[in-house]
Amino acid sequence: MAHTMRVRRALARGALRATRWRLVGTVPSKGILVGAPHTSNWDWVAMLLIAWSDGRRPQVLIKQSFFKGPMGWIMRATGGIPLDRANPGATIRELLKEAETHESFLLVIAPEGTRGKSEYWKPGFYRIAGQTGLPICLGFIDGETRTLGMGPSFTPSGDVVADMDLVRAFYADKHGVNPELRVEPRLREESAGAG
Image (tube, rainbow, N blue to C red; front, side, top):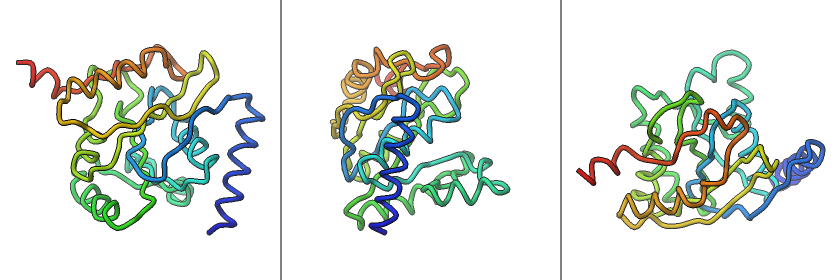
């Protein structure tokens, strides 16, 4: 396992150097790692490179359809967990159990879900953090500056609007690879709470 992590770390750092992307921040050993803005199919690779460069082995929730054929093996080998979006409960329950028992549990979630334009982020990252007590760690990709990495971490306070104000402030100048597909960090629950 230690050898595998050394290889992954070297691979990640080499890939970032070769592609001239700058890495910033440090990946925590435990938490819910938000991957945003999610504007490209390559974003999951970027989140893996961020984590691997710090010697972390994250798990990544990925739409179940991506696990068909030979890609399924690659997805699983890199920490991918198939998620049936129509019925995510069983997968989430298993992850919650694992989070309780593992000292280095790191789960990557792209809260924008699809790369298509939508109005709201999906709240799974916030709910899982609240249920487990794990911090939300803000990972990012910014194509304009060719920078990716980790920003701040925080534990949800229960005040969804205040917590999302922190998230919005951090991502305000992060544009993703395809800025036109960026979704403003906002949860549907914020509108419900205000009404």
